Amino acid sequence: MYERILVPVDGSAPSQRGLDEALAVAAKFGSKLRLVHVLDESALAMSNDLAMNVGALIAMLREGGEQVLAKAAERARSRGIEADAVLHDTFSGRICDLVIREATEWKADLIVIGTHGRRGAGRLLLGSDAEQILRLAPVPVLLVRQPDAAS
Image (cartoon, rainbow, N blue to C red; front, side):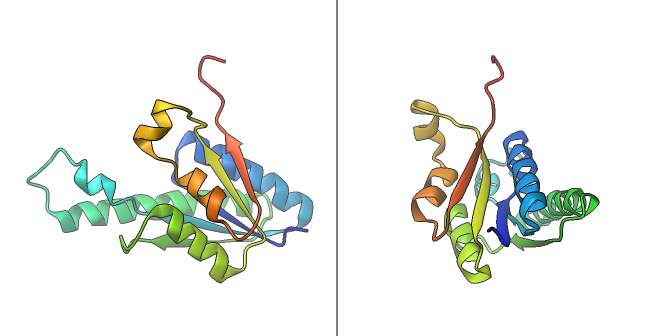
């Protein structure tokens, strides 16, 4: 049913839950995963160290993204699931647009995304790439919500 599953990963707890769910679906259907990490240009604007070279910061972000992808790919392979990884580091668009483009070009059958599940003001202030992917995706999207810490 789902031969090709696209999974955006960023190393966060919600992202890990999304990956766990994608691994469960892939195991059931014998699917291949494509793991995607997009460097977030907002990290450049939020850097507290104004003296830091932008090139050095981008290199650190790239290295961190490669580590996130490597760990996610290893988790998949340790379960016998084929997975490849793509790092988008061009800062040429919104995260949601790059994920949608990757899903279209790779011909994904499903996108699985871990999400914080924020509502109200939290979502308005932070925006929601998951919501935009859900709205624009050319294929079904499975949102995996991170449970509230209080529950």
